[in-house]
Image (tube, rainbow, N blue to C red; front, side, top):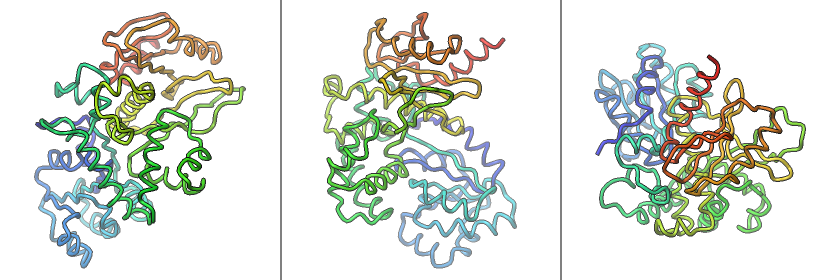
Length: 401
């Protein structure tokens, strides 16, 4: 079953304006399928094929001029041959064909490095993360319970018929560690790196403590920083940084750690079923990670730079997520509970008093099924959160009229 991606329209638009399009994102997020669906007349080439890779590396210029179809070429997994990007510059400057080269990559820093060196102004970069809530809803694949989705995750293969998600994510982690990590960075002890990944999963939704993480893993702080950067560069985790504009009080400055995909996090945590999610001590952090990762997908799918933060002061008052809109910050609280109680709004009330932004929209996303309107905030069921950023902006427009 083909699941339509929200990024497709933006991808096609970008190809009408730039000669080179880079589609980056985690391994198996659907980049290849999206590229082939969006550009059916382009010749598809996988650089994971050793013979093709050898041919491309032996004579890059000849490969790039003779291999494409008349429409262009899709080069899958460009990180195996980043040198090809250097040769594209002279070709696109000569032919001036927009959308001719479509490249995909599952390691963003390799592509970024090449852009800064050779293709600035000639390449558009779009990010495709795993499936979003709205994409699953459009395909009628959204489960009834949020715990089911946390366990299953958002990778397209996880939503195919008769797929064991335990086997899927176990193999994904093995492939990532044994293949990608070896290629990206020379890590001698892969067993320690896998332990580090599990420790990160155990800290999902928490402020990063480099000392604690290093001590528990038996590595120094510089290695912790390097490995966190590695996990982030390959789209396993993402950091949510603190929002501290215009605040007089001392605020927390360290970022919080989340996983791009909760199914992968569950595998690392050895959570093997929906019921185990429901009973797990990290259920709240997993729900947070799911919702904030989806907000990140909404921004990427709209070809926007991420503008998500969290807010916490030195006394522990906290807002789970802040969307930094151009005119004002929009606070979002995330609760795993399925029934709304007044206590859910205490941090929102504190935020309003502290910021004096009493008229800006506020939202509370929860694990229940019904959208509600409360005086303190608009309450959004988790299934409705897939279009939350659109809702935020439409509310702002109405308020400004």
